[in-house]
Length: 210
Image (cartoon, rainbow, N blue to C red; front, side, top):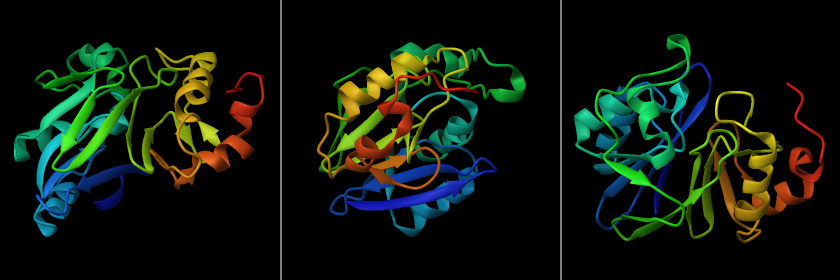
């Protein structure tokens, strides 16, 4: 699997490009901003972007989605619970991005997406948002804003809930193999084993204090 990480924008969002080296089929996981940089990487690696896979629909994860879809013809995918957020965002204009066309694919827990010879499993992990998604392929998890290195996504925005995000992580993400490498929406990568042993927001029962 070919794998690229781009850190984009003033919120240090991670944009991940994964591709099947045999077929050159690719998927972009989150499209925060700076579409030209994403497109340049795709061109340099001679990749055909088939999917834009959103982990959730907050503005800092979708700012380049429309431009990227228009330029590549890739299918834009989001959880069914957040489909309306793309075209009718609930957050104030300063914190939202409106997409002109609905998502091409509405995803649910357990769905599978093929990118060439790569199979990605869709994991619904509500808590940061109602329709938060993670994407798993053997040994690798793209966790969006659900799970960070030593932290979890904030839960004080519409659709967020701290009890729910802990449940998502404990029951779904911590069920993955311990050596799974976790690539979050912001910051450095981690592993499931490290988070199980060290993440204080999951190990403790107290509420996140904002």
